[in-house]
Length: 197
Image 1 (tube, rainbow, N blue to C red):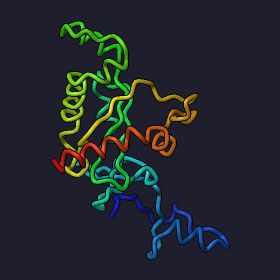
Image 2 (cartoon, rainbow, N blue to C red; image 1 turned 30 degrees about the vertical axis):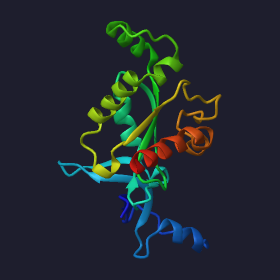
Image 3 (cartoon, rainbow, N blue to C red; image 1 turned 90 degrees about the vertical axis):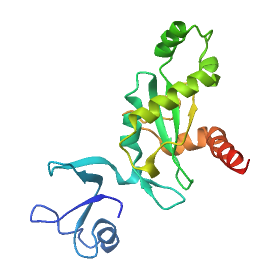
């Protein structure tokens, strides 16, 4: 069960005319309409949409993760500008994060760190530790299998022009996976190396 919202009733279409393949994709065997949305019932009994099914990814352990909700939690940090959850087919979720460099500059001045460029910020262990703590603090309520185990900081914003965002500013996950393949591979290779030692 992946949490997809299904609907049935007089206001829901009965199916596609002369399109059995489409009907098989769109309806369950017992006639429920698959909405394509992922949701959950809150404490008050209200249905809350949390993600789109096509955004889900599955870890190598077989757990489905809806990335948008977790990415929003991470972006709640004033030190984070953009975040992308990764981990499809991998052992654990990780995050690519574009820091809010303006906030980091202020933080660095306050702490007396001599950091000036995005590259210096992204490579500094004190900044990486700060962002890791921010991620952990903002994702305390999610399940253990959804927890971000590793992060990588990116120097450049993801943009429409760069191909990482659609014109409506949605993440182009496939493009991001390809563009940052070496960064993503390093996250998981480093985790394997540490585990082996």
